[in-house]
Amino acid sequence: MSDFSKLRSMVEENTSLAKAEKELAQTMKSLGKLELERSKARENLTKKEFELAKVGEDMALKAKDLAEKRIKAKQKGFIDVTDGELKRDKDYAEYNGKIAKNRRETNQIQEKIAAKEKDIAHEKMKLADEKMDVAKTRDKLADKQLNYVKIASANQPEEKKVKAQKDYLDQEKHLEKEKKDVLKKERTLRELENQIADLKKQLSIKISEKENIRHPESPPTPTTV
Image 1 (cartoon, rainbow, N blue to C red):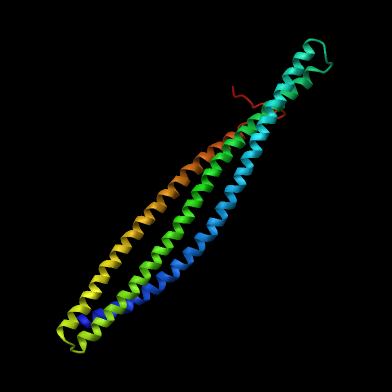
Image 2 (image 1 turned 30 degrees about the vertical axis):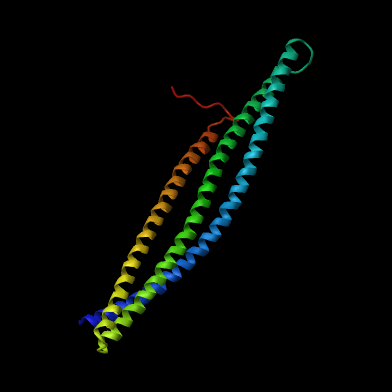
């Protein structure tokens, strides 16, 4: 294959790649916008859930305080209630307090996850813009390569040929620089995704802790001999 034939093939390849890169960048931008909307909605929801958990925790503390006051009042003979009723009230207050505390801590982690998801969505949109820039730069490279082929094969003056060759070689360097910038942005994105993975592990631990909080009316755990 002659140098001109090889360069023509590169023109076709770059044109095809640029088209595919533009389509991918456009889809990534759309995805980033949708994920940003979702992450903002999740962040708002987790903030409300956090507020609810805090109020629930406060209510449980007040219920526990009331139960303890009722126990003291019975001991002094001021109220007539059974020990079982007093114990049940205190047990439920403690149980609800543990559940509310776990829910608050869980929501704190969920809020952090939503915030990271929002950061990722922003980064995806930036990455999509940079990928679009790469596609446009590749398109220009194909144009400049084709221009060089036309000039060189038409026996144009050497000065014109040299300039056309320099133009496409400079464009190749520009393309390589933009591709490196995209790789840096992708590394940043992966770091954020790793941070979310760590937060999700913490979330899983909190969820398992909730499952270990015993309900006052649940049967006792069997012991092994």
